[in-house]
Image 1: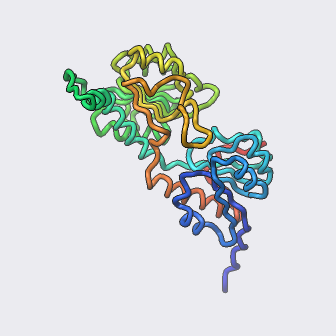
Image 2: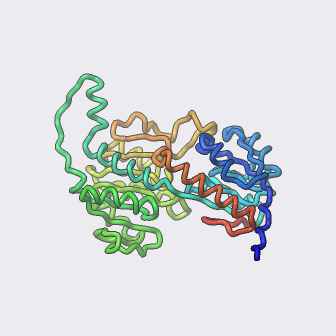
Image 3: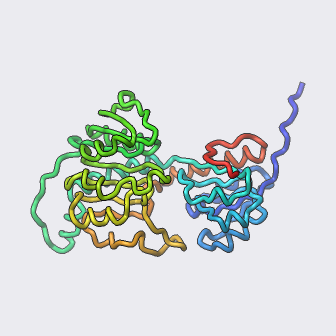
Length: 332
């Protein structure tokens, strides 16, 4: 007896406007059901993206502002090529549109956090700049990472993976999350709590890693008062979202030596063309104690290869009438 064949997959039109997937174009398209139409408009050309989504079923992008959502009222799925969906205007999408995300960036970001912590705590930024001027400078004797307390503001995929790396150096870890409930014993943390414990974390941590997502309650979660609690020998690493840390307060704290330094991979302003523009109102680039990177901590070859697999698997599910994984919102 032969099994009945599965119904044929629905033919979909997919628009990919995430620039990081372009180098995987052949692999991405090969993983889609036969008959799928795939369009690759220039992500920096809003009009081209709008034209591409007018009759599309799927948009693959972390950016879907109201004007693109309005143009794509037939969209059934908007799939971010990363974890963040704050660039997707869910309220502007047609009712019933699914919004999904993917991860796989936590290993790369964990490496970045450890590297940045060592670089900042050991004063390598200043030493590099001085030696380029021909100045050897006075030696300093900072503590090793194994003697540090690392505080995690957010303990999801990124925080937990970063803690594995820091723990390998012998550091002690503490964490606060929006919901609480992290099992400190299971995670081998000294303690874990909710946001009511943020002050205690900041006062006791030598390194503060921010990976909490941006919401109404986390905007400016860390401002002047909180930065002062960190102390002048502490460093901050923000790999969550820029506005979680108040821009004015952070710039002043770095400029005035309120904290020792910061590694900033997420920002307050992003260039419309994705290529050129200042990342904030203040001249962070003039600060000798600040490591600036262009939202690149999660970029690695493995990151987007795995994300591509997640996204194409979800498109196959949609075409087959199956449930989509990693849905984080449904437009209403």
